[in-house]
Length: 371
Image 1 (cartoon, rainbow, N blue to C red):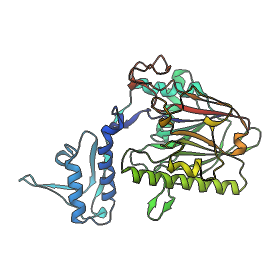
Image 2 (cartoon, rainbow, N blue to C red):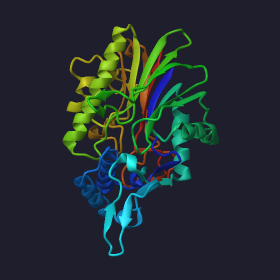
Image 3 (spheres, rainbow, N blue to C red):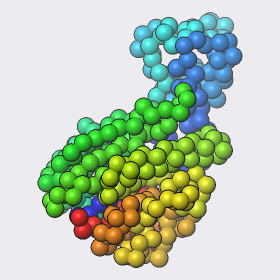
Image 4 (tube, rainbow, N blue to C red):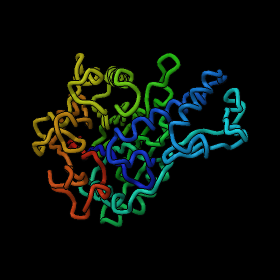
């Protein structure tokens, strides 16, 4: 059985801001968007809240005057959010969440057709029995990708596709695709796990239960931990550590219940030695990273993101000890990534002729398991 994780990124639509050449170019916009979204959810808007929202909108050109910037759109469904006077002054009308129906949203644009097909090529080459996916838009999109795109490139369609909408307002979720003989026995979602008044997971940490052909039970947790993209480094690190701590507690609880074969896979947005990931990779954890397994065949690049440097090791397949004992092989599929400015750092699919046609910035990981 082959288990894989892949940050798909390029399917059909993505927020325009996420298609910029570098993350830093969109960092402030994402911070503004997150802050606007947070304030608009308040039951009551103070004058300070309103002033802050006006300032945030003004610094995104066009959003205050036209309701739309290059990257953010104000969507008013019922009731007006802004009042524009003839003298040019603009004020916020509602005094709280109940006074209007609407939201701020990130504008989206279609992903290039070639990038979508190259995403399917990665999955074709891996040919996983269980494919964990990160940054999928929704289950409808994932089904369409499975039914329409994978066969175009000569891949085998998956028999089951599942995705639970998570907590990310941008609509980037985690899901799973499996071959038809591997039915999903049960699903446990953690979208509503809280610490105090704050939801723990940026997306979700779904648990998928499988029964293999040999009758063994396998539990797979799919994750996309907090990015470093917006918020202060201290805030991002603290949230990522809270998420890793919660994943560890879920893992420990399942081991205590008698589970032997558990995998935790996905994009953790941090390196193995980082403080935020120590609940999973230190602090007495017995989880084993596939890239550290004796049967793993790497390509002399330790990272999974971008150019594959050590500081870009952010994707993982972690295994319980008894599952790690069943590993027959493992590897990294990097041919969907455009390496370096000119794409010459490592081989990629011949169908990728420039960076915009790449399947993803992330390489895919896989593990072959004898269970």
